[in-house]
Amino acid sequence: MDKTFDVWKKVPVREQKPLVRAHNFDEVCLGYNDEEAALEASRCLSCRIPMCVEGCPVSINIPGFIAKIKEGYIEGAAEVIAQSSALPAVCGRVCPQESQCEGKCVRGKRGEAVSIGKLERYVADWTREKGIQAGKAGEPNGHKVAIVGSGPSGLTCAGDLAKLGYDVTIFEAFHQPGGVLVYGIPEFRLPKDTVVKHEIENVRKLGVKIETNVIIGRSITIDELMEQGFEAVYIGSGAGLPRFMGIPGETANGVFSANEYLTRNNLMKAYLREADTPIRPGNKVIVVGGGNVAMDAARTALRLGAEVHIVYRRGEEELPARKEEVHHAKEEGVIFNLLENPIEILADEKDWVKGVVIRKMALGEPDESGRRRPVEVEGSDYVMDCDTVIMALGTSPNPLISSTTEGLEINRRGCIVAKEETGETSRFAVFAGGDAVTGAATVILAMGAGKKAAAGIDDFLRNR
Image 1 (cartoon, rainbow, N blue to C red):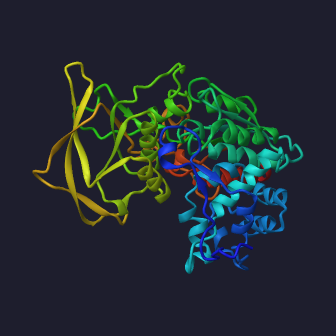
Image 2 (cartoon, one colour):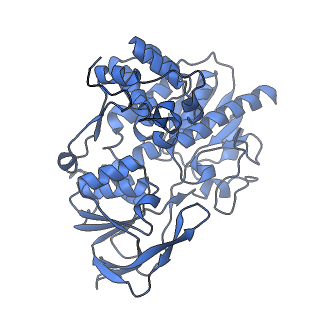
Image 3 (cartoon, rainbow, N blue to C red):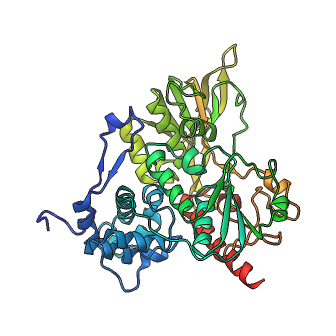
């Protein structure tokens, strides 16, 4: 073992240099090589009661797969992961491990937690590069299940059901499967052709069929799916309806939702000159919001050549984005205007954005989320010139499915009401999970919901 190795610290992960990556869409994090992964795996204590597993929404046997890395049996590590997750290369890149599995790691009590996410990514990348398929389809049981949406929740539910022998078909509204993995998360965080397409292909190899360009509620309804012989339906359609502030000038040209901005760039490759759906990158861009989507939008606009400001009404400690994403954004040159909030968007005579009226904020008492509530500072208004504004304020489910499915209960936020443990809804044989139920959340929480729903559907069809 390297004599300079400090067992209390994570093995550093290689990355592109900030000033280089700020001008390209190549992946920022380069991951571990064989030696680095073995060294990091050696830090795992193989706890008898692994708290890290409790912190994982899909309950991966974390000490089990890390033990295989220690043995040098990487294919075995992949087999352990495949028992719980259909998307290890995705999760290893975009999951908030610091607040989940790594947040529970015993090593983290005295030093730095084991880099569980980077080890999961290493195993997934190794198996992809070696052409190894982990996980097998079960013996056919004669039951048909329809999945609405091919995002992380739908793919997980489909994969788990296929392993149990179900005949599964996914219906996807877009022309490519993957949901938020292809339209929402930028290439520099999650490569599409290498990583996402491969993981989707692995789900297909389990026997799952995917039909694209099918809009449930327009092309076909859930009732019609049932009439075609599907015995259960899982709705994992996500939350793609963007929110806006409702301030004056918000309809001006040059105002985007983060959803549209990222979809054009990620799914439709608008950053390429030859793209069919180009986007106006802007010279000076304001991104409103402080979550992971805001970071993604800001870092995308930066790569398109703009000066980028993130405007957020709270302070840095209250930023909901992952610390790693904030760190990367700062390194690359994104400017953070904290404790500030837009109150009006200004436009020129042709109705193109020319600036934003900003009001400074102060932090008051904590609100129901536990974060200190922002309070306006009167007389602090000023104008920030810009030519593009991106609203990254969250999303809610599209009402199309709920409005065309009789007997499907929704709550006041427009989310489908479903049981947390099984995904059962108020409609017989219809299950739901992920962002369609919770509103916008993380990839891994959507996967956890898909996993629970698969078990719920299996129990329903076997015991009805």
